[in-house]
Length: 282
Image (tube, rainbow, N blue to C red; front, side, top):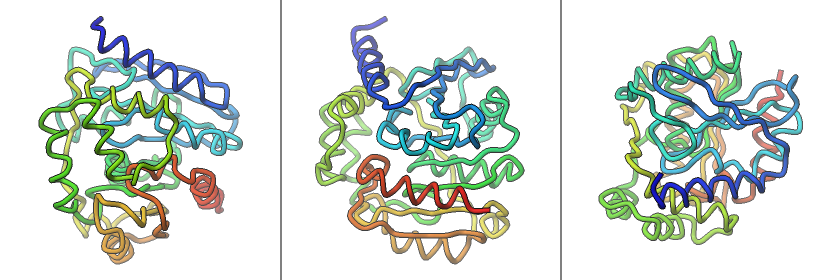
């Protein structure tokens, strides 16, 4: 194990040690490797699966789990092939179909025939894409400033991210985070982990197309689309308008004062209340 990986794993464990609820760690085997799932909340609670954004890990939910796990059985997943405690197998995930097959297998491994699903950023794109393919497995869907679902990225955001994409370093990741969030307050241990995640060896995100309007109009899953009012990733009002236009059974809101990267942890209590109110509807 390299020194960089040792530092990353130590930082990961340091954030998990600060989670305010007892947790269960599970490693699920599949043809793609071993998926680490951190579970918390009452075992008989309605299930809620959390999918983190690109460049993050499941530890990004550190500020949300206390509220969400009061009534829900929460499963925070590290995706195989990205930073985290999941381990690649001999068959890497190379396509969107394989990515969705992997998520299918994770739900099977957790014994979840049907679940609520919440995704942030790129995790929101995965959640929506999965719900369109397997609506029978998703009871309700929550999208937190999801990217590439209803509109594209702002050019300025991509331009600012380019140095990080070309040569990922902890310093560049933290500088980009500070720029996009307006230096929003975050747990120092998580900030360290976020920086180190940028240097995770051979991390690879599986990109895919934006869902077509016809696909969205065919959705049957009740969906909550929450957008960051100060997001620099995309035009939140344009995204909201497109979601309202194309996605049936959708509720939308633009949350003022929140950034794209800060939406999971900045003003987390208010965000969690909104999510739970939606999930608890009959």
